[in-house]
Image 1 (cartoon, one colour):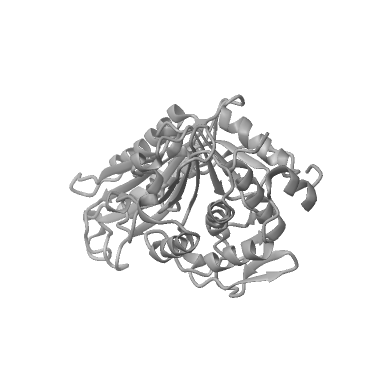
Image 2 (image 1 turned 135 degrees about the horizontal axis):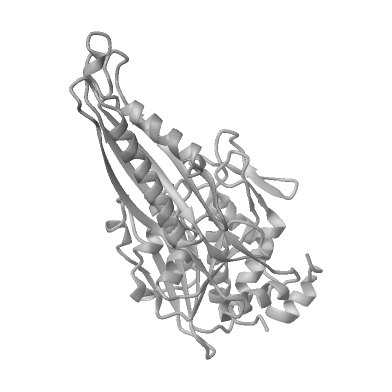
Length: 406
C-alpha cells in the first residue's frame, strides 16, 4: 500500500473532507435492512428516501422492470439516478448491487476494533454488497449536498446479483443515459481492480428411472440414484469435476444439489441434480458442459432392469454470464488506477473466478471496472467490514464521480 494522504492533502486534491461518522452510519443502516435476492424493496426505498432528502426531484430517480424478466420474480427492478453534468465530459456510471445472500437476513452490525461485524453470530454481516451500495449512495449524496462539480453521472443499484447477476442481465439499458465507462463496487480491498471475470453456466439435470419394490422386485427397477452416482464418479475420475485442468486450459465444475427418493423400499425413479460449469475460456466452459451432460447420458445407458429398460436424462441449462477481460489500456482501467493512487493506495489488477455485475455491463457495451469496499469473508457468519478500507472506497468513488483522478 502506498502512503495514505492526510486530511489536508485530500481536501486540497479533491474536496474529500467528508464526515466519516456519517459515512459509517450510512453503511450500518444499510447492512441492518433485510434484503435477500428478490426482496430488495426496503433497500431501494431507503436509497430513494435519502436521495430525496438531499434534494433530488422528479424523473431523476427511475426504476426498470428487470424483476419481471428475471428467473426469480422479485419485488422491484434496478434503481437509477441520473444527474446532468456541471462540467463537460463523457457520462460515467457508478453501481453496486442491493441484494445479499439469505444468511445475512437478521444482521445486527456493530463496530469492534476498526471492524464492523454482525452482532448476531448466526448471521452474515451483509457487507457484500451493502458496503458497495453505501459507497455509491455516499458519492451521490455528497455531490448533491455540496454541489460539487461533476461530469454527467448515472448511479445504479442493481437487484438479484447473488442469483446469477439477473438484475444486470435484464437491465433496462436506456435508463443508463449512455455512459462511456462504469465503476462497480463489490468485494475486496479498495485498491483491488477486477478487470476480468469467469463465465458461469448452470444446469438442471433430471434423471428418470423405473420405480419398483426394492425388496419384492428390485430387478424390475432402474435406480435414478445409481445413475447419478455413476455419472458423478465418472466426472470425478476423469478430471471433469471440481478444479479442472486439461493441458493449459482451466475451469471448474460442481454438482451442488441432489434431490430424489422418498422411501428406502422403493427403487427411486427420479433424481434432480443442479450443476455449474465455469471458465475464463468460454469454449472450454462449453466443453465442460458437454462432458457433464455426456457423463449422465452414459450412466443412464449402463443400468438396465430385467426387462432391458434403461433410464433417461434431460438436461436444461442457461448462461448466467460470459467471461470478459479488459485491456490494460482501457480508459476505465487507467481512470480507476489513477483514482486509487489519488487517495494514497497502490492499485492492482485482478481476475475473478466468480461473476460480477460487470460481466453483463461489458456485454451491454459498457467497459466496467469492479473495485472493493473492504469486505472480508463474504457469505459467511464471520463476514466483516474494515472501516478504514470502506472509507477509502468512499474516497475513490468521490474521485471518480467528480472526475478529479488527475
